[in-house]
Amino acid sequence: MADQAFVTLATNDSYARGAMVLGKSLKNHKTSKKLVVLIGPHVSDQSRAVLHNIYDEVRLVDVLDSGDAAHLAMMKRPDLGVTFTKLHCWTLTHYSKCVFMDADTLVVSNIDELFDREELSAAPDPGWPDCFNSGVFVFCPSNETYGKLLQYCTQHGSFDGGDQGVLNGFFSDWATADITKHLPFIYNMSSIAIYTYLPAFKQYGANAKVVHFLGQMKPWSYTYNPSQRRLKGDMQGSLDPSFLLEWWALYSGEVVPLLMGDYGDQPFYSGCEEDVAESTHVQPIMSSAERKQKWEQGQADYMGIDSFDNIQKKLDVFLK
Ligand code: UDP
Ligand code: MN
Image 1 (cartoon, rainbow, N blue to C red):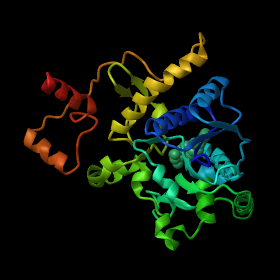
Image 2 (cartoon, rainbow, N blue to C red):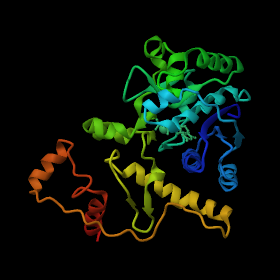
Image 3 (spheres, helix red, strand yellow):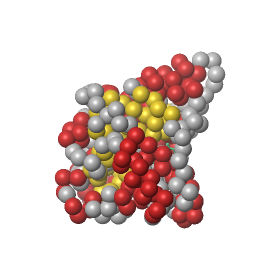
């Protein structure tokens, strides 16, 4: 439908890459909705060109800061101030209904059914489930609501210094009023769930429709070797790398070629590299029975013996 859209936000080139991958993932899963990206003034011309290639609408917005720097510092996430810019999405009144998605989300299945939901629908936050996570939410653009949101900000601020605090304060009956406004967790499956509740992840993780790489380490914080299909970097906080690898496969396969086109002869850092030094991880000695038992208890050694590389090696041997 022409009056419904997915909306995301990128205030710099790193998040812009996230937005590119998100847009590609929505298109690859054949969304029938429009795609809109809100950008800040610091996004480079090259990134804008690629965003124009993927999105129907690229809208420049002035960054609104919450002015609550003390709160933000307390949360050790000073970078979240810019997420206030998210509120601009309510001004997209040429659409009747939208789904906002953080630029650090990846769609792994068609999610157009979200447009059957009403404002404000969102999934529970894994850290405080009576709050919704503001990484994915259904909303109806309205200048009236936008005005009220801004008024709410000036009167009450944000209890966490970011947009999630404001939105939860404003839509404060979300937890209790209407269960249909609670999106299933599979529409905003945060990577945090993987290490806080691994058995549930093993049981339900395959049903995920949207993966959210929330927290400090974003997919673009790693480097990737496309020929070996492996990641380099501190893997803490994302014990199961399969979704990260999916992000990187899409980025290196479909986004980097677009970026290369727009950068021309200018060098740019894609995050992809060809030679990753061989892992020197010392593998613990464990019997196969012990190992099986650990697996079944959800205690796979993802960093070592059960790493993706080792599983892949085993599969390769098996398939040969
Ligand atoms: N964002 C942005 N620039 C920034 C920080 C955040 O554009 O410097 C946008 C981006 O869409 C991002 C969202 O705000 O996905 C929320 O921030 P983030 O995802 O980093 O927060 P988290 O989900 O980790 O709490
Ligand atoms: Mn996020």
